[in-house]
Amino acid sequence: MQKKLPFVISAPHCSSRVPPDIRRSLALTDQEIEESTDIGTKEIFGALPALGVFCASWSRLAIDLNRGPEQRDRKGVVAHVDYSGRTIYREDGLPGTDEVERRIRDYYFPYHQQLRSALDLPEAAGLFDCHSLFGTGPPEAPDPGETRRDITLSNNGDEEGFAVPELGSATCPAGLLNAIKGTFEDSGFSVSLNRPYKGGYITTHYGRTLFEKGKMALQIEINQDLYCAPGTLELAPDKVKEVRERINHVFTKIGMMTAKHG
Image (cartoon, rainbow, N blue to C red; front, side):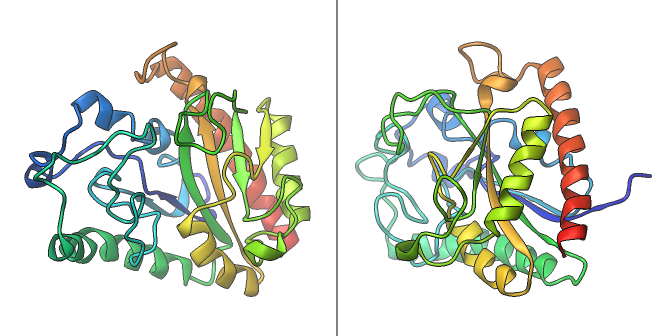
């Protein structure tokens, strides 16, 4: 049996499922809902033999687990628009305060309570918050129209992994981040640091506390072009298997690296 990796894995946007009562209020088609899903994250990162693996049960369009519970803007914990800028709800379907609070209570807090409990385990060396992205930046992304790398690693820092004063502390030391970057590159992945994303709520919220304990948190984005059939959101099974094996190998090496770092 493979030894468990000393990490906690989070995949907060892996589901395209929407509770039926919420689905009736959405203006989006099933295909458009699928486009808001981090395709492949459950199949690739969710399969890692990690200390704790947490995969969202519901779509980010119902509740976004990677936002603070108090964030109520158009891209908040219950978003009003998706990443293509489309309005999510029918004109009469926008959820009110009571409905937002219900979703936070029923869907949001249980996920985060489980995540926090796993991160509190003494053997947990850190957190990987796992996402996937389109090969080209969509309109509402920080890099619209740009071609993306295979892997984006984010620690709330700059493009070399160092802390940015106005953003606060990094969630992983720059030296360790660059060593992890090199591990991915050794396995044939192209890698960017903190571009297009610097790390979302889960990474920064838990990462600062972990960093203070000598642990780390990273957001990882994987390019869907690696394992989706060209021009589609359909997983290509052979490609998924190949990428999953490569990622497993990389994480095994990172596990040994963090043990030495600690």
